[in-house]
Length: 410
Image (cartoon, rainbow, N blue to C red):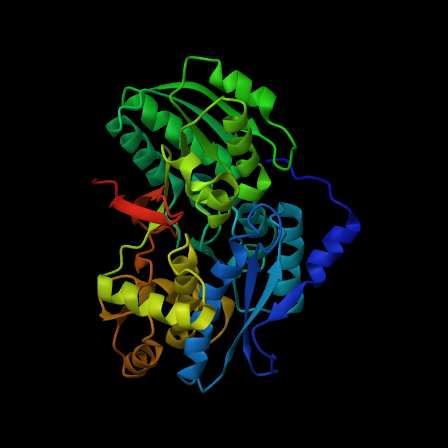
């Protein structure tokens, strides 16, 4: 993906836009957060950040890590822009001296942050929401992880569900980014393999006032039954939906995770989405663990804990805290070396809200196995997790509801 040239003043604003959940003391261990509060993912960012904030708050209320040191989340707005993401991450790692980084949110930001900042500085980076397959292949010296399920599975689930709904022909429009291209290819390959026809597959650039020309081309080629929109609501996604409906190009849409957002329903209308459906990573945690996390999140944030990637953000922060405790140090390489020791089986299971118990087990030399708010976190050699994809619809009331989940094994 080509990085857009942006004004120096905008970059400077991103660099300086650092905040912390509480006053940071000299002895606090700083955790960096690269989130999107503006730009294409701006509507999702605050709730995803609050997942990390909740985990850090729980750790601190349980007495902190090591010998009572508090964690401090120092976060920044990357404006859903790769260049700004690199700049703010550089500030966090080199100036703020964070022990690890949570983020970025968009794959198109996570990859350059990894290559330019976290990998060269031997700093663990855990993205809660970047799903592009390309992340798996980074030469990262095992410093890049993610709690979000890679898009290879989402592409398979979209293809299978479309065929199960008797959809034989689809058109795809994907934002021109690592996320958009990776998921578009996964959908196209799987849908074709399952006997479907992709009538057109094209990229679009975000923040344009009109996509009517692209929509006319997509709808006029091969008689597609639905349009797959791989993008973000505020970065062209909602404009594509609105202009499709206004001009009669498409009336049925398939909306992957980047479009699972209440702003889609508010701007497009529930009745206009009645024949549409979408996908997003779904929690595979046991019901009791899910409810424990969701109750805590509602009390902490007053927001919807079922939004995509909120649970994954909580898990990213909790895993970093557990790794610090396990390593007995906030040294960056020590955190990396301890990550799988606290997440991968076998071990005594600990879940959301159980940091005090986990700390006690670690102190007694007991191997722990963290099973998170998003489900079991078993990092493979690439730092990826496996999971399930939820299939969601918009109810008449406007509620976004997950109807079922699916995995590689169905």
